Structure formats: structure tokens, C-alpha cells
Length: 117
Image (tube, rainbow, N blue to C red; front, top):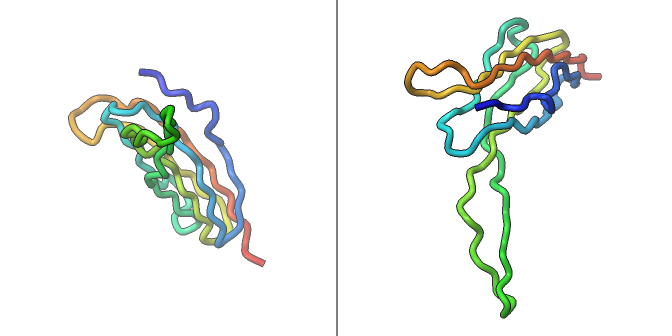
């Protein structure tokens, strides 16, 4: 399984008190989940992995009524919050929470936080 990380930023800049949401790529039903760990700069930025909103679709029938949407998994997203001025480095890892399989993907994210004005 290969995960395309090319759309993930390697560096972001935000102000203290600001929040940015980054969609995370994954394969549905693979058993992998994202985690975030601070490597350097504790207390400067917070990165958490949360579930986003599932895609909403509706298939219209010929009579104008809609089929219920199919069951779809909610995509994961990294929520980055600026806490204090400085720079932090976070490691995002996509892996199974069970077993000993190697990580499916890893991505380093550098976060620069500017002081609130």
C-alpha cells in the first residue's frame, strides 16, 4: 500500500491562537490510523488527529426522492493550533494500532507560530 503524501505541507506558519485543518490521506478499511507526536518545540503548537465530516452524497431516483447515502468513513484530519511564538516539529504517522506491521506512511511537519498581536 502506497500513500501519496505530496499534498501534505512540510511547513506551515500560523499565529498563536490560530487553528488550521489539514486533510490526511488514507485508504478506507485498511485498519491504519494517523497519530501525531511532538519531536521538538513542546508548548509551541498542538497537533491532534480528528475525524472530519463524512462525504455526503444522495442518488436521486426517477421520482425525485433520494436514496440514503452509502456508508462512508469519515476522513482523518490533522488539526494544528498555534500556542506560543516559536517553531515546533511534529511527526505524523499512519499505522495500525494493533499488531507489529511497519508504518504505512510518515510525514514530518514543521510549524512556525508567530506571537499574537
